[in-house]
Length: 331
Ligand SMILES: [Zn+2]
Image (cartoon, rainbow, N blue to C red; front, side):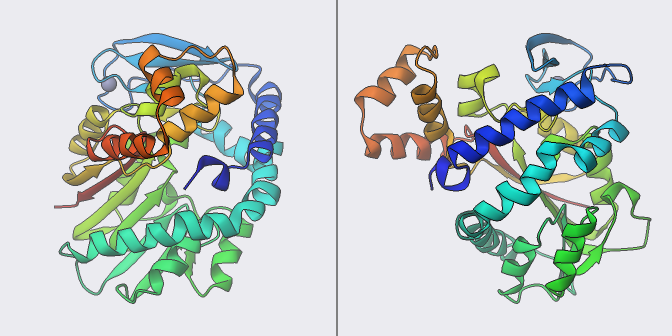
């Protein structure tokens, strides 16, 4: 898989441009922004890493997590997702135009690997799975095909997306996960893909997902990590560090602190990302005067695709890719 197959350059640039404009509309005034401690280890010991599009990103001295602080409140973020042009563009153009590629390259392989990983674990019966932020329901649709789960359930606060899931015969809770009441829903597995980096309060999110688990149930999420290659190499230049959408980039150490604090037991933390070097290469093509560490520049210019693939495999194998998958158990 290559970056442009799931994020065509022109479409993605347009989206990023709209996002920048939206920041001026929604967040030019920082009144109501909140200063937070590190969302990983909760330390109040941090320093400013950089400022991007008016958002200050700090780096935790204790666990190296990168996070936006001060940040818009939860209500401000929800309002932004409801009304911003960039969100509209994502839903009406970006997503539909990349849907087929994403189904093939992201959702099908994701369903296959998650099904395999979960099949190897002890899962409370009868087996049910909840996808938090289910979007168009493609992951649930794909994982249902394996027959491992008796019930597939979506949590999706967006009205149009929730309707899209219902049409696929998926049980839907049209709420934010934080608003689902105790005992309204209990599942064997609760998962969430690429939602975590967007949240005002990661602790609240994890605890809200944990609340939906049966004893012994599995909580699984994926996100972006600041322990990974492309984010650490590109830093401020990374397109993934895009306020106001992406505001949490926990390191592996930060994630461990978070799951311990939430009373979850680590089952598996791994970084199966495939795109790190490709993303850095593309950025290097796009910005001619981009300053890369000499070694990386040499690797990109003087080594071939085979070495690049090997390098990406090394990152995956050693938990050094920026795309992370976290599997925990509710004991
Ligand atoms: Zn920290």
